Length: 120
Image (cartoon, rainbow, N blue to C red):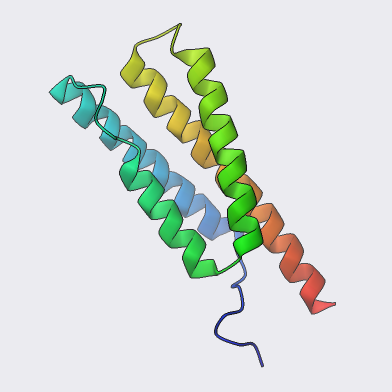
């Protein structure tokens, strides 16, 4: 019998819904920041909260750490590339979305691989 601390399986469908939710939060954050015209507001905070909650719910710490590293790397790489080319608010929103995508991709792949190894 699995203990309460064991990680939960991550389905592709669940990952897709979380990705859609995070992109919706990125879009909402973009509109709020653009409406207030204050690019210093932390528009990514709700997205980070949602991802953190989802990672903790699955309790796969290896996948969570690797996803955090991959998401952060993607976010900062996109920021460096996009900020000189477009409006800061747009670049920030797109960069957060790219970081979310990378984090979810890594989390799902690592979590699914680890659950497959445990079943053997």
